[in-house]
Image (tube, rainbow, N blue to C red; front, side, top):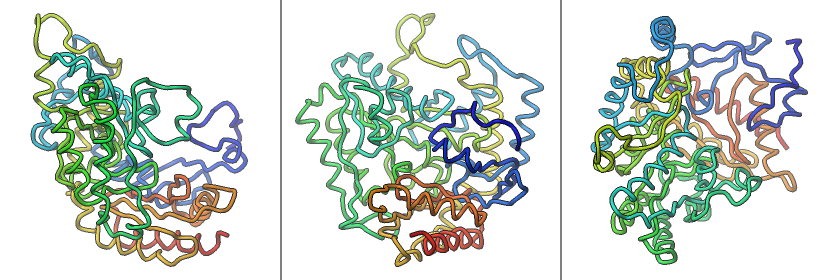
Length: 435
């Protein structure tokens, strides 16, 4: 590659480091990328938690091509196109019972903003306009718009941007390595951590709280699993106090935990659910919010010619995205991918937990096809050891992801056991070479 790299300010990237030694991907197919030198790279992270069905799947490619030729764009305000309704219906049927309505967005960040606004507007529509407070969780990641970073709890994503939204508070996170290190699947200890929501109810009064948003599995902060019984207890507290429970399933949706959604894996149904990433297999930007029927129906009052919810985006339900989404759901169904993490989950768990005892490894966490290998931080250089391991794995032809000092894995659902072993062995080799 000969062109100047300076014009592109890359997101969530150490730009100066990258541009000294660029990692440029030029082609993809199945489980693999190829770089600009023609080298094959095994994808251990499904792109960015999103390419769940693997790369360049024929049905999805063909659907996008055909849609671009037939209907490239249709306005979503006061107009529509058939595939938006078809995709919404398919998603509602895949979702937990009761989440029967879908509001389309273009990303996980927009899905979070939309869900927060639905929660606020819902309480106002039902005569409880005092419920304006939004709650999140420490170490939570809910995208990068102002609402998302306000309810989010990752310090590095918040500290540069002032006071953010007012009236936001956080419950504590669920990470408890003293009791739960090297848990296989859900940790045994920590259901009582959900009771921290009661502390905020006491502090603020339930009549001021609209909703709380949590990731069933906190992904971007380092793969933090919910302790057994935790989400159930959170659901009970929300019901007791009239607080809406929002699940951010942007990462955990579409087969990542062994069921279509983590809500089904863990047996807890939220009031609102945010989606993106795997909804189109990462091929066209798209997001969605699944909405409980009773919440949707509360808005359907007043004169029929008036807009019930003053919100939306120019590209909500974009034709190309809807076509990609329908083909993605077909691909998942044809190959049984949404439950495949259950079939190979045991092998994946054993493989990642085999890293216990390797240099610098202080915890391993897993559920479905999600793994987190936490490393001891290098003194004075937080995140550097994991980043060095990431670079080492890349040189071995394996793509992993790091967040802080955690190596995160979320491979495409089409992965085979031999590929799981190769990814883990690359990490093992890197750990033995990284100081």
